[in-house]
Image (cartoon, rainbow, N blue to C red; front, side, top):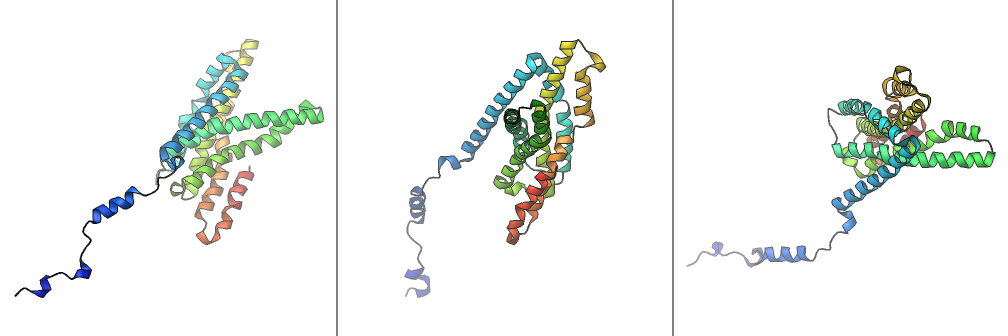
Length: 265
């Protein structure tokens, strides 16, 4: 006689073709939209930054001339490795991915610099036309408009990484490092403009050596104050870092903190 315990119960039998059922469900699963692909988004970001780079560098070369542009570029790149190494050292305990930092640098150097130069030029021209006083327009643009535009443009990189790379943005150090890289990129492009214009002035008046305007500009901007722009933007990074540390139940606190950091310059 056969053993009844050896016969499997009908209700506990497994389906005959589980793999086929799984394949059927997988086959008819709707496809993700193409713009949600990481590759597509990466290509879009790189393309945008490349276009911004072409435009801003062309504008700078137009203002400085080809010779001034090349001299400014060669001198402006010198403090960049030092600044990058300093901010990377701060992030040594839990270093974030390099792709985020390179995005931040490129955003500051190209996108933020382009927004700043276009917005500042437009605002100064508009004020000069409205007041018929070009000198006061230049002063107002340099002291009031430029800081707001520049810090807002640089803060956009920190905001984007805060929103779309949240897993890599965990606190104060991440905010400081991202902001530092963004401001380093911005200062790099700005230094090309200042050093290129200084070189053009030296060429016009025949100055050279340590007594030249180029040497003085390099000393002031690259030797004495290379951390000026980074320190301004780091305050914004601290605001985003504090927002990242805010408890989940108190998300409303996250909004004023980055704004306070951006406005603290």
